[in-house]
Length: 115
Length: 110
Image (tube, rainbow over all chains, first blue to last red; front, side):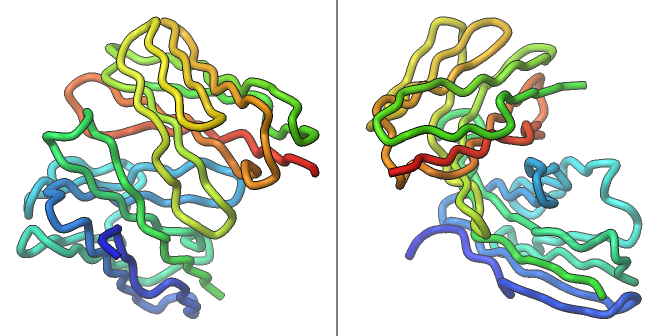
């Protein structure tokens, strides 16, 4: 399978704990995106990487959130001191600049539940 | 700020009953309008990109069209397997950020 993969698929944690999610994009895609989606809503943009550089960040991305893409391949999203409002599906997508403008291909998501 | 409004929020169709989903948008300099399909508990699946008014794209029973203010996703003779949430999104300016609507939940009844 050469699609976008995300791990873990589900994460249950207690309020105040730190969590980290991983995204492996499609291998030739150099652009990587993180989104958050809550029930009944569309995905909300969090941040964007081109290769290892983080080029855009949403105002939604508070200082408790940090994302990295150290070698321009996989990416991690860390949430520190989780709050119940962080419960959501976290989606990763990737795209290739020589394809259609910003056609993004999504992974299956990581569902986070904060108790 | 870019805005995307989708209607209806939910749509129930009999198998074979054609219909259209609407996506109205407000952007400063449209770079692309995207349609995705999302099944429950899964990530969105890319369907189409439209770049300019008058453009149309088709895939099986789906046809997407674009005007300067809205896009339509036409579903011809739908089948139960077309049941999903259909998301519309826009990209604008020189940014990579894409803004999604809240989706239309389609249910096709046998």
